Length: 156
Image 1 (cartoon, rainbow, N blue to C red):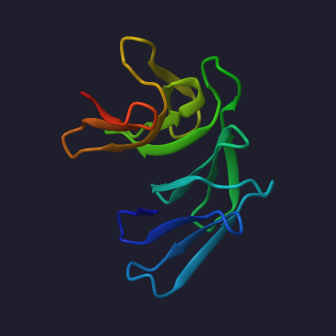
Image 2 (spheres, one colour):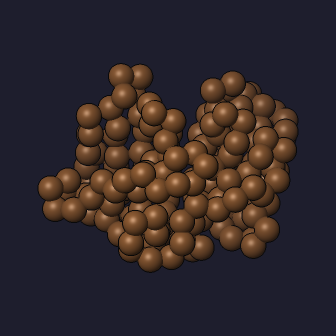
C-alpha cells in the first residue's frame, strides 16, 4: 500500500490481481485498476495523476491513467539497460524519475516518467543484493531496503 499526495490509498490486491484506489479513510473504493494481461501487481505509486505498477512475474512496470486505463509499459525481461527481472518496489525521485527495485538483477533502474532508460544503480560498489522497496526523503535521499542483506541502503 502507498498513499498518494492527495491522501488516497493505493493498494495492490494479489487476491484478484488488481490495484484498488480508496478514499483517505479507506471507506470507499474509488477506482479498480486491472492489468490487461491479468498479471499480479506487487507495488503501485501515483504520480502526476498516473499510476505506476510493478509486475515482477511479467518483468515490467505498467502505467495507467488517472481513470485506470492502461497507457504503456516500462522494461522488458532481461538484465541489460532498461530490462528488468523481478521488479518490485517503486518510487519517484526528486527529479521526477521512476526508480525501480530490479530485485533479481541486484540493482535499481531509473527511468523517465515516459519510460526512457536513464541509469542503473548497482554493482559491487553499491552493496545491493535484493532491493525490495524504495522511498525518497524530503531532502532527496533515496532509501532502499535489501531483502537478502536485511538492511537499508541510503543513497545521496
